Image (cartoon, rainbow, N blue to C red; front, side, top):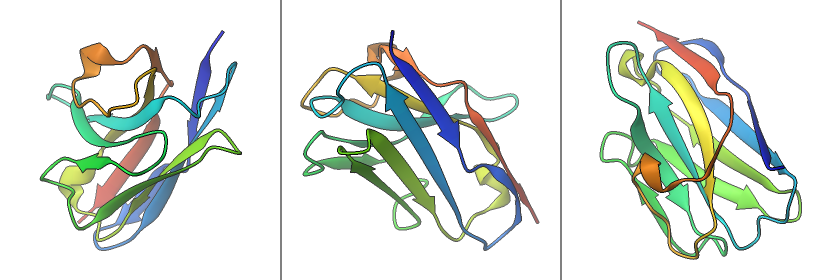
Length: 124
């Protein structure tokens, strides 16, 4: 059984930073693409960032480019999302997702495993 557990969410002011973590268990994720999605109230869940298993390919949504950085530690089966210069529009539940693929994907239907989500709230 694959499990993904996110942590690191919280309530912060605009301009602040947060680092989300997602710990994976149940199998070795070194050959998996790992990604972050988010779901804001009244909107569809959207892609945020993805990273290939060697971390040599990273994709970002245009809305977070230059502010967010995705990284991973395969020895710890953990993926991170460093979020800087946070804006109120970044408020959402952030989900970690995993896909057995060497090439990152940006569509949520392609991902097999999901965490329970962690809430990020950015106040203005």
